Length: 105
Image (cartoon, rainbow, N blue to C red; front, top):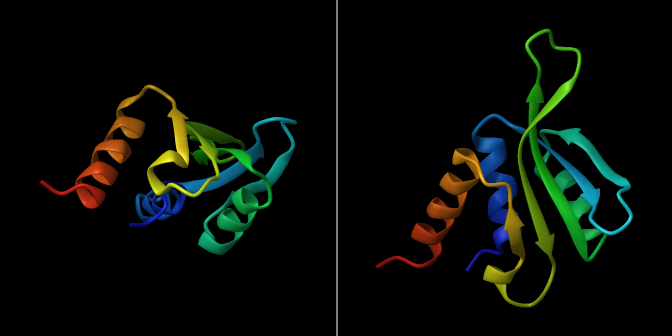
């Protein structure tokens, strides 16, 4: 089974989002918005508790706008690596798709 945070990063990039990473404890930016899977993964892997942010440029292309936030707690259990996420349709769709892929009926 694929770890939830790795699935989350791939899913965001495949949907056309960039991924930024912040430390959930200190608030430091660990990775600025990127369309690189490896850079986003390294950002999350550099801490035990990260916030994964899906973002796109705003309409005038000057600033990043967050569309979904996910709190990743790295551990041994794949399904336990995303412990919370923003309550919006985009985040819910990822959660549903992850469950379908990892827990088929």
